[in-house]
Length: 314
Image 1: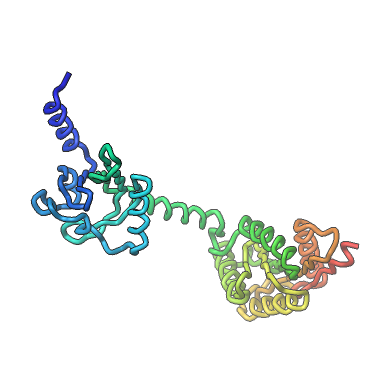
Image 2 (image 1 turned 180 degrees about the vertical axis):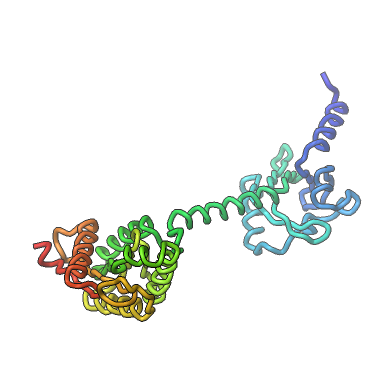
């Protein structure tokens, strides 16, 4: 069995050997003891902090309400733990995970406070890096690798979201599907590298045209693009679709083998969903828009065709 002095010596060695900073104060918050890890983390020597208040470590990054909550927890529960920003001797803020416990005497009166903390700077760096990686992965998952606009997956997610929102808000939802006319001939004539440049230019013009909050332009696949137009009725959908067609035509990208014009043109299908429409799912909505696009091609291309959803669903 160890005697009291031996136990105290052993406890002192353990506390000094730990990599966590330890601070012991009296009931008024005056620092009585700090261990070696405290000095290593903060840069303060023992002589510089003994007799001082832990306020010398305050970073100034927290509001007064933060400390009120901390002290309320200490007084009512006897402990507080959480993330806090303190500053070292050089005045540089750093994050730490802090545990404070109130030590009471036999009568329940607080005699001391013991604070144990760890510098979590490296952990915060890792967390930040993970957030950045996740953001990058999210972009890669939802963006088309060639054009940089939304891909088909992002389109499908957006359509489902806007479909539900349209039903809740009782507002119309329009969708555009468009296809570059005779794009295979373009690739055969100018090569796939120029074909990729053509797709990039078309994507750029589409995004520059559909710029309202909530609009989404996506590459649907190959030379086909899609545009979601929330809060847009059939008339508005047709106007935007015509604007898209004119703006692509205005690029004057040469396509000498096209049977429509000597430059790149698009065929466009438009449909509009009204929440009062019965028997229509968002999958059927896409199908009817695609049918309208096919009709635009059948009728000569470089034109806009509006789907008659009411007739199709009755």
